[in-house]
Length: 436
Ligand SMILES: [Zn+2]
Image (cartoon, rainbow, N blue to C red; front, side, top):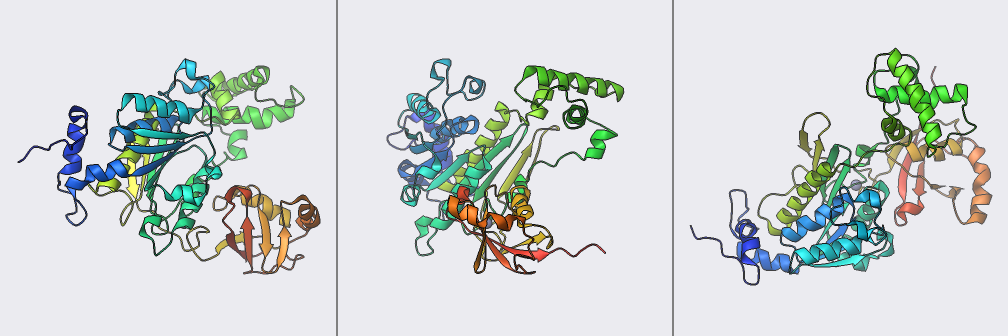
């Protein structure tokens, strides 16, 4: 067997083993799509966009640079905080206060010769479709669901059936404590982030009865102190989650309750975490997920092995909570997806409920998660968040019931939200039968 030669222009030692994968056919390469001799030069020309330069983003930038990508752009509007330094390893103490994208780009370029990274200290919403059209691949390392939904909707909208290049694969990584996921979206072809929105359902609250009667976990004792004991005793006029005196009061209450039920594990920092809803960021989870995402980027760009995405499995979930577990499956595209489908999504509602109930419920329903919705029925504006004059004019509708507003079972309602400027979410009202 001939030994793999480093392609001209590369530093041979650094790229020797990468080039063996990029240039030689393996047991999983598809002979119809794998052109080993061209891969390296094609990857040299590709433009890859990374969104986020935080915990996942630092890992992703380093991995992409060491996977042979040469032209990378990174978008992040955040600046470096001292609390980032334990895991966002491209940043140093002297960088605190500087832009993440800029510092991360400069660091990786210093260490990996031949890589060019352009930093954008901006929001993703500051760029238009012409900008996103320049890239062959988008890799997201974000912690916000809203930003993911925005870039997903933008990439789906950009697809033009006649232009093959308009389909930009989106690789999305996410972590939460010891859990994470890596997924690949081929816009309009495979299930999109909006189709998968229920995977990000807001965390289920612990039933009040568990808190009140039979706590089983330290978190239950803390929630009991937070929700029940605080209200009963009102030690301070109003709970300030940043006031150490208030947290200490909750901690001591929770500790007493935990002792009563023999539950170990209530600490001051856990109390702070539960009350402020803090999920710790774990460096190792970030590196596992970023590595999975960048492997997919390498496979998609080189065809050296089958990638997550089309036509088989597209979603890899990882859990390190209880030993190590991963599960890879195919998340199906949904016909009623507001972004990539064309059917209205069913929304079960109470016909005697008010429009305000419906508006409020859109924020918490796992399938909607719209915080500032404006609603229109077929030929009537129900409620508009802006401009102010229209808001004032439609505000009285909030206190009227759906029936009073003339809405019927099966009616379609279009919902827009400033977080998704281009998308109109179509919902079909399904009246809940009154309990008899
Ligand atoms: Zn979709």
